[in-house]
Length: 94
Image (spheres, rainbow, N blue to C red):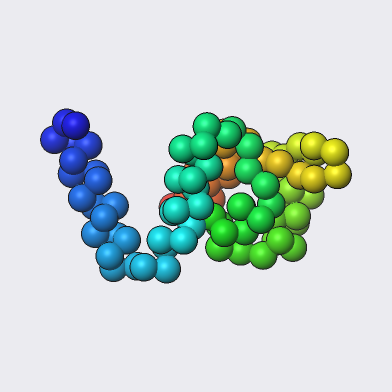
């Protein structure tokens, strides 16, 4: 691990120590990433984004989160989640 990566990891660990409420969303995202799956379910998004199912469906309806249906269930791929988070971050900075 490079010095930069080590510093980033230390910052993340410090953030998690200061905000333990972030542990559950971080663990949920890590579980999905480690499983090798590229798609997230609505319940997983609820945990990761710390919001309600209703809000997630609203974001899907308005196109804020790119989602697709698998049978009767909605899925969001990791790239869709990444794009959503980046758009939310850039909107806050304005």
